[in-house]
Image 1 (cartoon, rainbow, N blue to C red):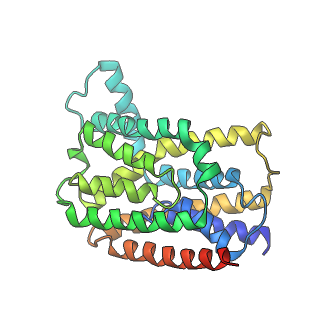
Image 2 (tube, rainbow, N blue to C red):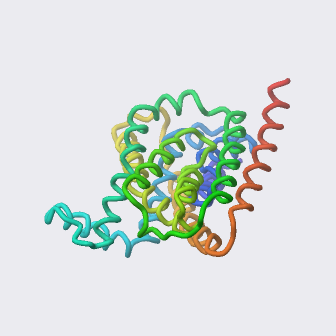
Image 3 (tube, rainbow, N blue to C red):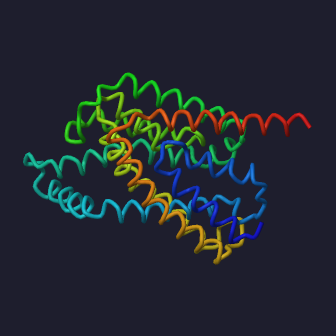
Length: 278
C-alpha cells in the first residue's frame, strides 16, 4: 500500500482511538499488523508520537477556552499562594497533580515498555482487561459528581491510572475515565477531566520526540509527505472523536466501547495465534 495511504489510515486511527476509550497505542500496533503495513517510517515510534501531536492540537483547539482560563488561573494561584475559592485555580492545580504520575512513569518506563511490550497478542489481552475495568467502573460508579467535585487525592489517583496506560491496549482515556467513574464522576465529567489531563502529558512526549527528530536522533528517515498526511488526519478526526465521545457519554453507558474492545481483542488474538502456529 502507498505510504501516503498508510499514513492516512494511521492518522484516522490515532485521531479516533485517542479519545474513544479503546486504546490508540494498541490500535497503532494492531492496525498495521492486520493490514500488513511494513513501511519503516509508518511503523516507527517517531511517527506514532507525531500522530499524538496531531491529537494534542485537537485537544488544544477543542478545549481552547478552558485552557485560556486555566493557565492564567493556575499562575494567579502561585502569585497569591491561594485558590481564593476560585474553581478555575483549583482545577488548574488538580490537573498538575494528575499529571505527575504519568510524567514519572513516562521518564522511568517509556523506553522499556516501547522495547518490550508491543506484541499484538499482549495488546489483545490488554484490550480485554481494559474492557473489563471499564465495564466494572460504569456499573460501580455513582455517576453523580461533576469535575468541580474532584479532590486532590482523586486527581492523583486518576493520574496513577493514566500512567498504567503506558502498556498498549489499556487505553489512556479508557483507564482514566474508569478511574473517574470509580470516584463517582458522571460519564461526561470523567471523560472531560481525562481529556484535560491528557494535554500536558501528550505535549511533553510530543515535544521530546520532535526534538529527537530535529537532532537526527530518530532511527528512521523522516518522510515529510506521510508525516503531514498522518498528523492532519489525526487532528481532524481527533476533534471529531472528542465531540462524539462527550456527546455520547452524556446519555449513554460505555457498553458499546466495552463490546468493541472485546471484538477487536478476539480478532487480533485469533490472527496472532494463527500466524504464531505457522
